[in-house]
Length: 399
Image (cartoon, rainbow, N blue to C red; front, side):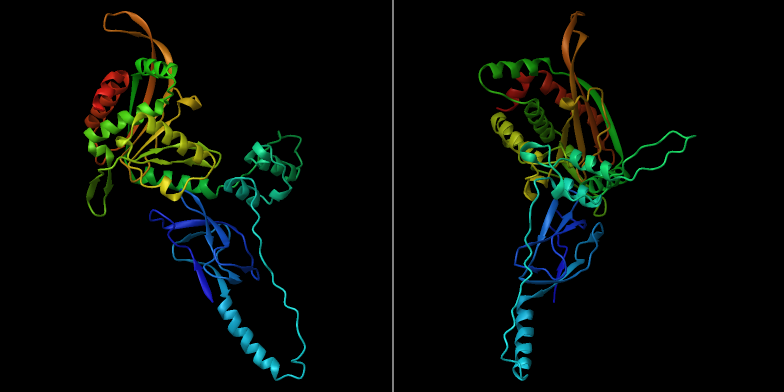
């Protein structure tokens, strides 16, 4: 009997949720066939069968949160089955009807993939919806979350309304999977890290003009590329912001590499792909890598290597309409997270006391107050603002 256990599938994970089983007791599986889908705090993963054989018993229940090393299910391997079969054959040879042949059937499991994200499929399972019966409204008939919500509403029982009270209509959705993992991680971050958030407004008029000039020459660069390049310089000059604290060991680690996490909003929740060695890449390479990682995040095709190891995180909520400010929650074990908000044209007073129209952007910068003081945060932000407000200085720093 082989025990299939939850193993560490990346970055020192300690637990995961059981999302869905692809098999049931009695199913025959081949080596590497998917057995179960689990959800960590960063990704959905399938655990394959370590051997060919027959599923004997499901141990961990769907929805359960289990620790690494916990047994998930039991499998009778083909070697064990062969031994049992030979033993039975020897016993049968001694019987009068041993010459009779018996037809042997095999229950082979076939894994059918649905054109829907893991979160959408889990949403359907948790609410008793047969996803195979749903017609998707997304691209290529992809089943979307909204399709599942619509199906949930059609299956909800109609409740009698009391004449004296207004009817209250509501829909319950599952708080499991990646949404639960995000919630757990955010709560852990707020409970263990004393957050302090610094707000600032930055004049991005010159940066916008440079982007337009480059675009007219056939080169398109996103605002994120400028932000990442400026932050890379700041993190080199202020290494405490590119660090992590281990309170147990009483050590602050200053990271030599600069890996920028890019908070990305997807239909499954917030995913943070990692742009590695950002300080060593050109504007053009940063643009290509940012675009590639964002597309992979939206299509849920990021590899484990592409979502681990960030040393500082950014969140650009401007395209979503975020315009005033926020209090970003730090992505542990990092020391800081900077959020960029919507750019707005506003009347400003220049150095000659003239009122001019400038493009202004607010930023929110949360940092770990255990290891970073307010004065350092102001100096860091001021340096970042200088590089963005005067992109010529940013270009000079690259030489």
